[in-house]
Image (cartoon, rainbow, N blue to C red):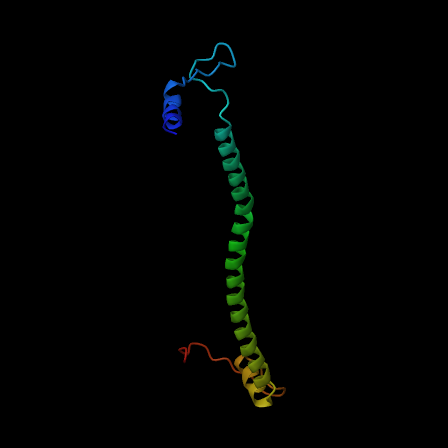
Length: 125
């Protein structure tokens, strides 16, 4: 058994590495041709960049829509508040006394009444 292990150890020492044959004439001896591992990396990188570009616009639109939705919600809240105030005013003006008071503040008079305009008075609060 010792002779086998001794010869097994000797074999790698005696084995000579031959230079790679050149496939294409005119190339330098160190050139290996197309590096498919690098090409594969560039293809994967290109596909990843394409995926990012395809997702960029929809994501930007979603982000924009979220901002617009919050703006619209704020506007809706404001309009609902204004609607409630106007509905309350409509209810108040159903009362004849409130309606008359509002008409008089606009300068209207009842039939048969005389309207007088006095100029030069200071504005009263």
